Length: 363
Image (cartoon, rainbow, N blue to C red; front, side, top):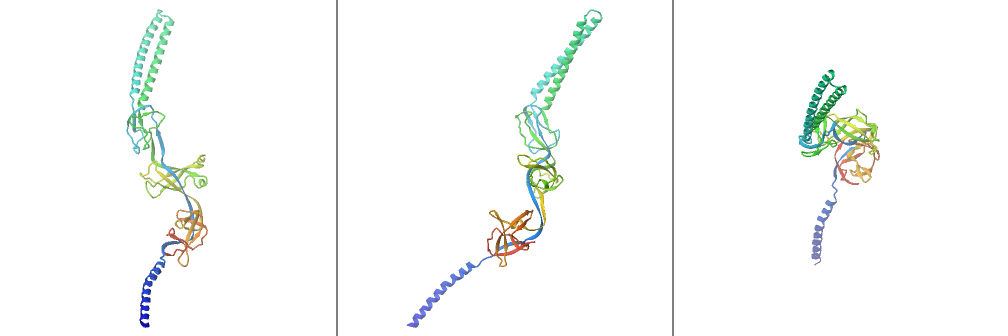
């Protein structure tokens, strides 16, 4: 009987053990830590050149606003924004009917004045002959001479009126003052225009510039002739070569910065006036300073931190103080030592103590 009970007890214990073991195995598997794969780089001594960027817009070296020289209604418009035009090319016409009427009236006035002049000259000749024969007084002669002079003045005035009317008629034909690309067109057929409002603008795109505003902290690093890089992403991702052509000696009182013009040296038909551009300038520089890749710095609120890897392959967060910021590397003023490995890829996924596996590194 006792043996039977012991046998049953053993069976129950075996069953309980079989039920517990799978759970323990599962917990052990769950507790096993999987390392996060990261890429690292060493903190090394490097030369750092700080580069600053300024935004601006592309424009032609010469950009001319086109104003109508006569007021009236637009009869024809031959251009649209982005068109290329040549100097002297007709771009629009104003209805010239009123000016042509004035021209015809001036011509009629001139003809009448010329008839009056011929008549006055003929009368003067007749009076002069009579005066010489003693049949006309000196007063009559002087009156005839005055009549001729008045008629001559009237003819000159009529000719001037014709010239003025002709100019107005000619002004109704609007031409481009320079060769270049048409900017925004402010009128359409039927629009009323005046001499005070531009129809459009034309930019000489044989050379293109970017005007930027540079603050007083950096203006001494920018001098005429200095080479810079210009980014026009609407045209291409790769930077263009640029050169500073002018630096204003006077700051804009509102913006507290100095206007600087940068010439784009590379030719590319894809660059157009009005496109957004960024100019990158090398400013301050330091030699042989401790630096790490830019992507190794992580922002934690107002703090800047890096994650180093300890001897147990765990991530350890260190707060750092940075100095100059170059294109690829950032100076470390405080918080790291030369040779320490920091995470540069995967650093946004780790926390203090995260187990990591190094898959690669940067030189």
